[in-house]
Length: 312
Ligand SMILES: Cc1ncc(C[n+]2csc(CCOP(=O)(O)OP(=O)(O)O)c2C)c(N)n1
Ligand code: SF4
Ligand SMILES: [Mg+2]
Image 1: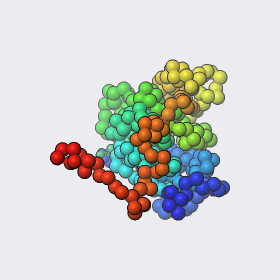
Image 2: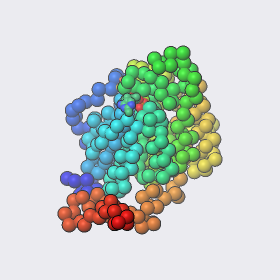
Image 3: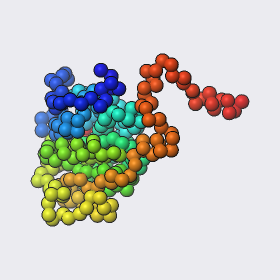
Image 4: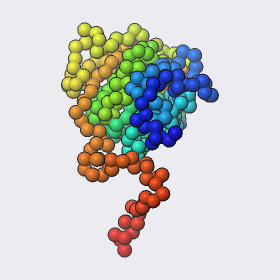
């Protein structure tokens, strides 16, 4: 079945279709938070009515980037920090595809930070899950953009002198229309937030706290966690930008003081996605662009030819 004919298929989906005992089995260390993302994602997709044949997972490089090796969907394991441009292109070419981009804190907030900011700014319509373990896991424990100030590692033996990136606030100010934080220790909340992110039209960013017991010995296990949408101590409206910004700042500071505040921090359902904006101005056809590759009769017009004609 192709990614075109599968789209829109309506049937019962068993979450184990996403992990049907295929090889390789996950090689993540025992106790790694990455297992929590896999579990939540495979729980969320069937509830959102999405089959493996209509799903694409695009990952960066890191322990987190191995997600799609262990996941039965279309997959693209990209290079370090470059999951987002690939995910954007795939979604633009085939808008019916359920695109999930994923990668680590180093991948998304460090080397790929530029893509993160602009993907949020343009409000591309897909879900981005950042496995935030506050460290470079795969390369054995170096300081990452979210490592707390003072954190000691092989690359910063005297403790990091840098303030960490505040990913929720960065996401909001860049333009993401859905921003949430969850933790691997909270699988039910994680599943519900991923489902909501999938159903959201626009860029949905989830900062997913994933403990790395192997290399981040100082790191908390992200317990106990508090759901700010459920707890009466935290009254705010996630559709109100100012209230969301203030709640995010509180959560970002609290994390470094050992308090784990999770939940849906911001949602704007009124803002059109990049794809919708492009269609409104007539720059994107209604039919998937990718179908042209399978159309033998399609008359390709190369932009280079137009350029050459203009300069003759
Ligand atoms: C261009 C480039 N620079 C550096 C590396 C080496 N490298 C591989 S993974 C990684 C960091 C991984 O950290 P993170 O993104 O947080 O993922 P994690 O392993 O923690 O899930 C680095 C620096 C690389 N593969 N490519
Ligand atoms: S090194 Fe850390 S992030 Fe990587 S698999 Fe092991 S526990 Fe997970
Ligand atoms: Mg990491």
